[in-house]
Image (cartoon, rainbow, N blue to C red; front, side, top):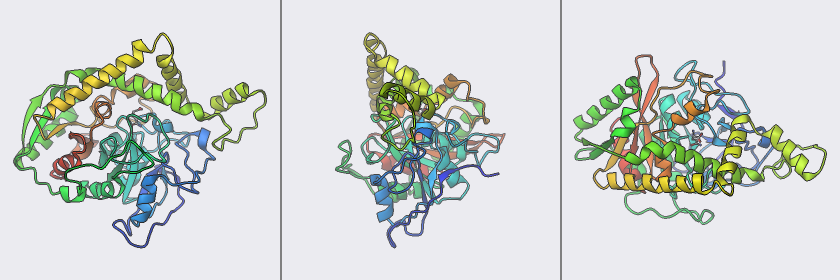
Length: 423
Ligand code: GLN
């Protein structure tokens, strides 16, 4: 049975030469591709064909990459399992009967299955790192502002970045080299200082590296996950690194703060889908209010509707200070905690996900359980920092486990170096 990794398999050829010539790079279906459908995993956009390329797609083409197709995803990036897609769930090629993680589950699955050499995902609260961990591949969430978001269909703009997924750290770094760098069409991008040859940083040389281990991000994980995590720390110590434990007291509020902010931004971003402008066929009767409501009723799935309602509530007069402003305060605190911990360490390490891949269907009716699985990934988006997930073996039940390294802003080289020591 097909594992349903792609939504569209329409090949897009790149230039004849370049650093990615001869390589295939699959693209998550919320990244605009000129002339090729871009659905965001939603019935709302099932007939939308963008007239332009996202900057990252332009850069792939210039680098000679072939795009074999657009990958399946949780609807608008809202999920952790790729089960909220209007195009059906994706299966995990590395763990039968289990989800591939999400929301970039299709991207991680096609790489794990060997149906693409590499892939692009997007990470708003873990959506590159979670599927990388669940499928046993590598995923990088870049520092906010390293990679252009021009042409990325917005879910929660202040949190998200496009990031590479690949079988090895070195290949993920090669793909990052191609997509990174300022873009005049995204004013939040900037030129990073320091070491920016990311592929060269994948040298595995961790001698003298100081690794901070945040207690709060380890103690909440399942035993089976913790065992693999400490094995990875042992391997890094053998390679010449040292570690010390650190505390990030604010992270206990990260999941709540993340969901309030992400849903608030989503409720505003998704207001543009009125059934008229983006290809949804329409045919509704009545005044604009009725047709608008009918299109949204038909076009959005239950998880997207839940988030629009909750986000609208959090932003409404009378509740704004109680929820949205509180979440912004928590976000500032999380950022400060990470910045302080990273003054005393080169990188921070933790399990990427506190649990191994869910069985299919397990978390669909329990959104809270799904949200809580984002405990280790969401704080990094709140702090706008870079992070990588690398495979760290499997549980006794043969389920993949990933280890996450977090670095200082624009410190991609440090996390790539740490991760490559485990390659
Ligand atoms: N699981 C998180 C969410 O549902 C993260 C999603 C993402 O990074 N796009 O919001």
